[in-house]
Image (cartoon, rainbow, N blue to C red; front, side):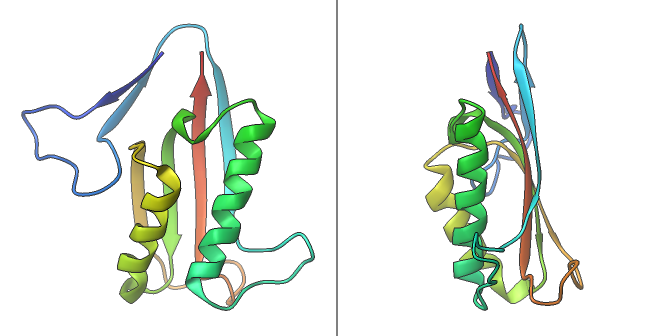
Length: 128
């Protein structure tokens, strides 16, 4: 069972995430490695929006391969190289999360493994 935790005694989340996620019972646990925007043909889009579309497509494919959906995500960690792109990133993330609010961390970093990568997202999912 997955329970989203947002205690009333602390400030409400200011976006599409929950402060905590509790997983109980006999469940499968999936760890999704950091996904970057490499398309299946090996190309890397230049713009943040296109990179996010590729990454979220990868995450959805990994979830589907595990018989899970976006609703099974319990935690995502996102790494962004340009703080001026936060608003666009958050809008795209909300589109893919479809109202689901897993625990989430967003970190702005100076660079990723390849200078063409603008964003990287890793995640954790669980299913009963």
